Length: 80
View 1 (cartoon, rainbow, N blue to C red):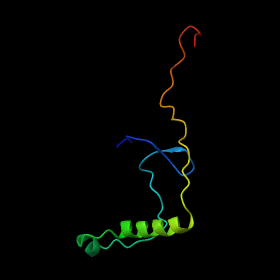
View 2 (view 1 turned 60 degrees about the horizontal axis):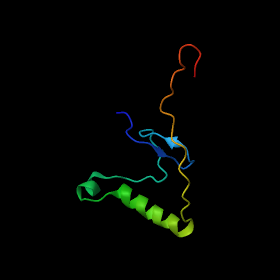
View 3 (view 1 turned 135 degrees about the vertical axis):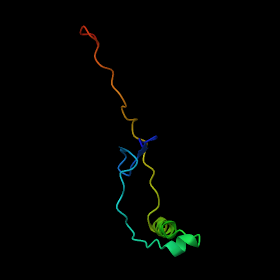
View 4 (view 1 turned 90 degrees about the vertical axis):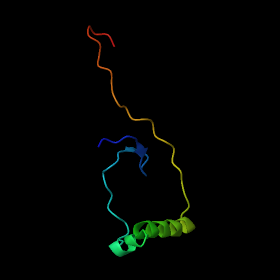
């Protein structure tokens, strides 16, 4: 499926969906926990985020310029 929307990454550059990211925290996602209505990955991520907020805070970066989705071909006859 083609990406439907864009977003920018932590480096302030446009990025695309579906590239995947290596996990920072390994979490066992046992079927019994999921069947019990728990979400071990979400719980671990929320706990890690709250710990980081206590020590680091948040810095919002400005939105980068929009990506160029297409370019007009040059006109025939030498015009621009």
